[in-house]
Length: 472
Image 1 (cartoon, rainbow, N blue to C red):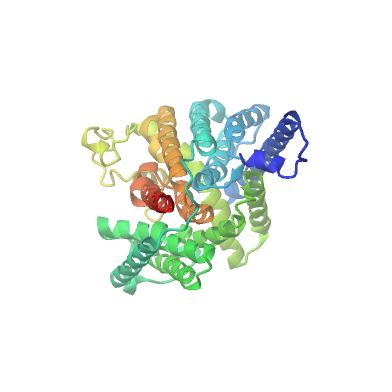
Image 2 (image 1 turned 90 degrees about the vertical axis):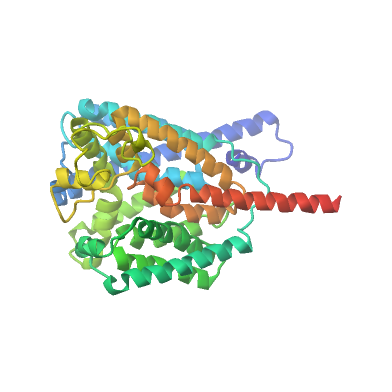
């Protein structure tokens, strides 16, 4: 639909249907070529980053490097191409934002880095990478072609919904300050693990409060403030992220507000949505800038380099092979680490007595990294709920489940203000690059946002229906 509007916006009135169709096809082919070119550049950059920075600075965390040959180049291209061909051409709704982050920060880096970890990577990891490509292609199709639902009107959330979010944010802030006030501090990048221990949630309900404050309440206020130009709401959102960083020193918390503001600016004109290729080219520019600073010893440069190249790009990629290797030997979980499923599926025998069970990140951290300081090796959905659960089959299964969720998200947010929905989804999209799918659904707003926007859509539909009845 976007391609059709773009191709016909300036078409002469006397153009034939055949001429318009040719113009649409030409425009579509150009968009597809741009996506292919941008992803090729991204893949090349990831390879260079792995060869020159990750393997040199972080080899002890698993970033070994074996140079590509012709076979690896062909395999890498074949694994990236299907999802790229099926991908939405524009980031014009919430589902496309989620897909963009998974494509650029999980899929492409995982393929490129995994194939360079060892000389026999094609045979060792080929089936799992093929499963990853299958899963990402399903996600691409869901984000691009899933029925968006009936659009009633592109409205902002109602006054009661905004007040509910404001009150929830304020109450959560009071509780967090009461629980963690004495332990809050701003730490340097190399001291985050000690602060995370100090700011860890001491109970299940407090853990949920941490995640909802960071992924739902604060993001909503920041998004509303930026989109609607409400300075107080924007300031409240930024304050929320600041408080959470002082509590648990999560690098994600430091990065997310910047990404939200960036996407708010880039999506400010719905009639001219952000092209996927343009977003990928922008990411490439950021990666190139971070890589170019690798010779600098300045603290700010080191922080940015570590955050972008290692934390944002490298960690989600290397976790894929690490989880696959570990659970292939220790035994697949078959989703017994998920609370509901654990009621009727037993954990692997070798892990049943582990004191960290069912926290897979802690188990992998202790047994793979063998470090008490860095023992929470979180992983993205394809590693944690895919490779760890059932190998290649698990990756396809979690991909199918995520595709269904993306389709539901697309339908629920299609009636919302597109810019607000896009900006609100940024934190959760980033979370998925380093968090399990089922954990994201329950703890990080994965179920909340479709329900929230769906309820707002029903309110708007009811309002429209009432107005039409009165008019008649």
